Image 1 (cartoon, one colour):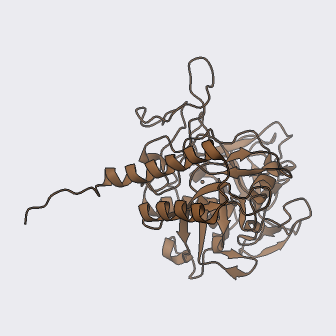
Image 2 (tube, helix red, strand yellow):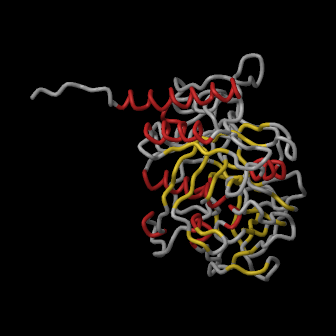
Image 3 (cartoon, helix red, strand yellow):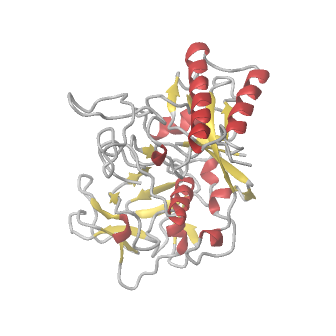
Length: 376
């Protein structure tokens, strides 16, 4: 029998999911929150069927954000050794929350857009074709995402690291809006402008408006805009005067976790063990120049500290290690130290004075290598 091409070509599959996501955006723009169970289930079934189960729609469950829609991407749990890099045979820390192993996590497919005011009608949506959120500080981001209800949270550093590691393992470096509306390496790849940097240059682009090469895995079901567009805050990691501190595993996925100065922060020793912050010889980011500039060095002491205005930077894969210091795998698993010499040339910036919180993903004017999540 002669083969006849049917409707399920790669292009048609992408068209179908894009049309459904666009219809969901139009529904939100037209009617706001989706609060009836029947309509929620209908949207979930559409998106799940069209994505072969890789995507779904979740809805805010709190009183103030009930029915706010979020298109999400499923990441099933994986073991560290399955990723390669000679890591141990145990579950990836992104899937461990408060000592409980999770079978999966869901990460928002599109960068968050803010809705309303926290305490009144605040929350976020993850929808195709929106201007991505870009005006809130870290604390506000925590509040807006937590306002969606139990399980919803600002993406954590370990979740971002999971996605980055999967990209590296697959050998696929996603492109994006990292050069004024286009990709720096493929200028023909464009997104739809939602903001202009000046009279002649594009700034932000609409969520999901770029080509499939702008998704984390190059498919219509992957995370959109992981490279460029707007920076993304990440929870569960910080620097305090250069000391690298984390919340253990993915405990920051608990949206009630204290991420202030008195939270359950842990520092890291060279053997990878977690200890109280301020313990002697924990791992820190040192700068190579006396004024806190130059390049970044992983050390057990801060010898050269920023005055608050200076910073150190280098290509991530060239982040150095001081003589005699051992970098444990946990730092690499959190994307806080390079795995090897191949990370695409993207830059790593650091100030080692005071409390510093991570932003990742790069923006429309800087090429760097996803922004919220739900954990069941």
